Length: 104
Image (cartoon, rainbow, N blue to C red):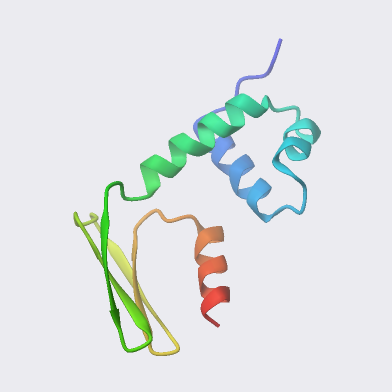
């Protein structure tokens, strides 16, 4: 019988898989995870953490401003090379690291 994992354990698995060089299938096999459950949990966490709906974008002098259609509970603001980013609370750290790396 397959072992049941808590949502917190799934969050850790998903973060580890994102920073792993393994394919998602190989990661699931290595950690004895059901790939279907992995993808369902990843989608669940993504929908919970990321704002849903359309985002209005406006191009201004080699930068892009995004205006969310709804306001998150709390935001953090990062300033990277004269680019100001407003990021919703709960955004995964791995996503932030990739975003900052891409802007650097």
